[in-house]
Length: 267
Image (tube, rainbow, N blue to C red; front, side, top):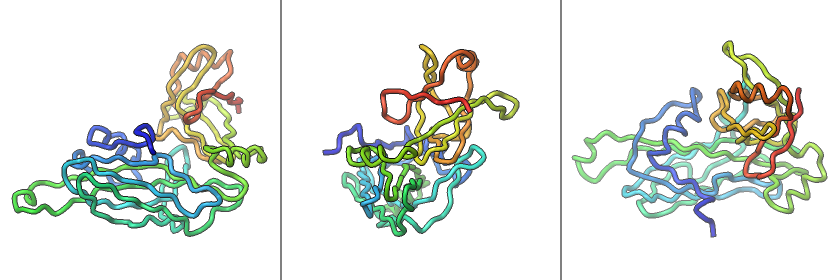
């Protein structure tokens, strides 16, 4: 059974971070909704031997919700998130009404296979649309909507997510089937930033930096997710203490849910 820790509870208190995560690429939404959702899995993947993955939406609020699901190709350019229309992943159903207290499965199907030894990245955008109410008084009230975003990664032959033993063994045969990170100090808007470049074949979700005995939360400048996608660079905030520590110490990063940090070489 899926545990609560593997679900994403999305309510009005979580809204602002998801709007900010989509930044200037997609239109902003309003700030309140009566519907609250559990969404799981929060990190769906489609392995090279799979065609689709289910994502569950459970309406734990007190009113019905109309949901629209779209999938965008996700890339990074000039240190910023980029979203584009695509035909590789199909969400079914794309629009559905979910009554209060019920759950709905959204099937994300891969229409075009991922190239061998490649990881593709997408963002699944779930919009809550206005629902027509049963009486005139309710209909006269202003309807608001929320927006949720979860990542989706797909894998071609010879590479996998590494979340299970089978894909871990697969990746061990490929020296590039991992994030390969480099760092340097750069300038952005007249201030120092820590730039992390990924030359590996897999993305890295960076949550923390470790230098010597000190730890620093990873806060990206133009990247609300904390991911560095393959063949991309992202700039992180560089506190003065971290900058000083980097002069004489090795940079380590914590990636995803892995407990052990790994060394990042200087570019």
